[in-house]
Every structure is written in structure tokens, then in C-alpha cells.
Image (cartoon, rainbow, N blue to C red):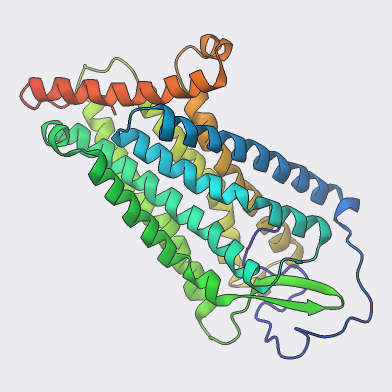
Length: 346
């Protein structure tokens, strides 16, 4: 899937200067070959499925958590995460059309904007997952304080800060994304030619801020929670822990291949061109899949799947999310009444 990545599949020139062929008159127009290649067709079908499931699933989560349920800290987290994934899915048709036609027909500004939305989704998602992990950890270690301080208003402020930080880290796409036309084919690509070390700086910054540092924070938080779980026998339901663990694991599994191949691209002369091209296509497809897996996990990680499956989709999603909120509220209330004993629910 040709999402806004750092690799130009058309040739080995990774830092195209754009001086001669950006607006050249084509001698002939290359016919798209995607529909004739099995690998490309599979990615097209996968992208279409991701769009449909992600668009519908996140729309349902937004509707239920935003309009059908009582406003709580947990629903604030879930609503923000769903909005991030929903916006990403809205822009997927641009990438699908680009991959099918092998030609960027949406113009210069949309090239920049679509790429920025992709990275806004990446950073906002991981920052929200970090916030949720820290929230769960604090609730377990300091239950009385959390009972008094965890409010919807404060959670909303944290969400806004996470989105602002994500927007700031998405600015490089607005700066470096560019379009060029060569032999009748228009490409949306990253033009790093004007700044010597900009490519490496952007790739490393995204890897550290969007993967490594958040991963360390999340691992520390859940390690503390596991230690508390082992030393406490108050656990009655492990569902909230399973849901959050699945959400976090899914994010990293989806995004790790993308980051690996982006870093490999920094030394593209050492690797096979076809390997990098194919790897980045698969990596961006896996990254996109994260946008529809989140709402799926809300539904199918609940207790007694068969019973929930018989009910309506809306009821399943609302019950799954409400159960997480009730579990957190129960343990906070219990912890407060027991003079600060650490609860094991998350």
C-alpha cells in the first residue's frame, strides 16, 4: 500500500532535487501495472478491507463512547483513540487510489496533508496508549490519590496535550513532502535534498518518539502493575488488563515493520531495492491495520464471546467498554474504603 512513506519506489534516487522533471511534458504515459501483479492486488484488497472495517468500527466507537455512554476518564481515552483512527481511515482512499493508478492525481497540498494525517495518527495513538498505561499504573500504585484526582476534565486536558504534541511531530511531512512528474507519472515523495541530514533526523526522531521511548514507558508501567497483581488477591476480572495489553501489543506489532524498513532505508545502498520497496509496502499496510484492530479488540476481548455475539454489535461494544469503566470504578472505591490498600484491577 503506497501510504506516505519515505521511499520512492520508482528509482534508486532517494533525494531527488526536483529541478528538471517536476513539471516536464511526458513523452509517453506509463500504464499502471498494479492490477496485473498478485502482490499489489492483495495489498489493494487488504487496504479496502482495512478502510471499511476501520471506518465503520471507529465510527461506532465514537458514537457509543461520545453520545451513548456517560462521560468518564476511560471513555475519554477510548473516544480520542477512535477519533485518531477514524480520521486516518478517512484518508485511506487516497492511498488506495494512488496504489491502483500508480499515479498521484490529488495535487501538491494533498500530498503533504495526507502524509501529515498518517503521522498524526501514529503519534496520537501511541501517546494515548502511553497515557492510558500511566493512568492504570497510577491507579494501582496510588488508588486513594487516583480516586480523588482522576477527573474527566483533567483527562480531556491530557488528551489535548497529546494531540498537540503529535501535531508538532507531524510537521516534517508538511515541510518535506513534494510531488514530481516523470514520464507521465506523478509521484508524492519526501524531498530531503535541500537539507543534508534531514532524512536521518526525521527517521530517527520518529523511531524514538513514536516507538522506543513510549515502549519503555509502557513496559515499566505494566511491570509495576504485574508486581502488584502478584502480591494481591483482590483480582476478580482480568478483562481490562487483557484489553489494554492487546491494544498495546497490536500497536507495536503493526508499527514495528514500518520503522524497521524506514531505518534500513537510511542505508539503502546496502540493501536490495526490491526488498526495501516490498518491505515498506507491507509495513505501511500493517500500520494501517492498527486503525481497525482497536475497535475490534473493544468488542471481542470481553467475557463470554458467544453470549455477546448473539446480541447486537452496538450492545456488545457498549457493554465491553462499560465493563472496563465499572471495573476501574469498583477497585478505586474499594481501595479508598480500605485505607489505601492497592487494588489489582486496571
